[in-house]
Image (cartoon, rainbow, N blue to C red; front, side, top):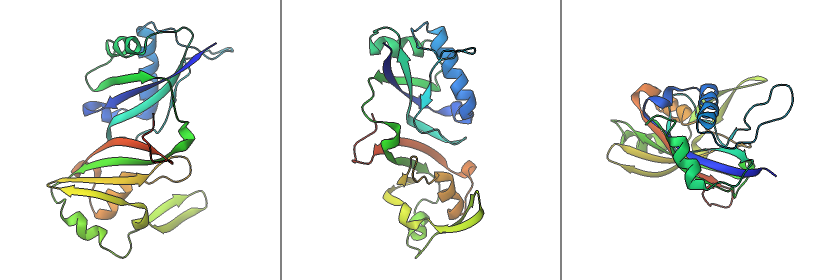
Length: 204
């Protein structure tokens, strides 16, 4: 019987420029180099079972990422963390490994930290009656008001803390918020700091 394990990690520094596809390949190679007893899919092209909870956009850092794997043997979760860290760089850091509690479909929100020079102007931005963006869909382009979707938690010095909808049902990318504010991602340091489930608890 394979045992599900959830691995939490940081994606910071230069690693924020790694695409999601390349990140998948990096973690698959790390798992093999760590010689962990990871379950692989069956068939003509077996590969490591690996599922990411909430893929990041290119250029965004995170201190709360996760992926799921399955183990063919019982192995201490601290050992999983340590053996993986030995194969990775200082920009990809395994925080912990543990048995999953929530399903990916239970994710509802994510918290982000935005660092920018004109952070106080963001308060005026949030005081607008509406914040309209153009969103591309399968049927074409549509305009939506994203103001009701943004929870402004705090503005302190040059740091803004936001909570945005995330998950399978509704998702608002922080890049869309930054663009609506009038900046590019190169002007702002964006870090995902937490992921929450529908019941309000942190995704674990």
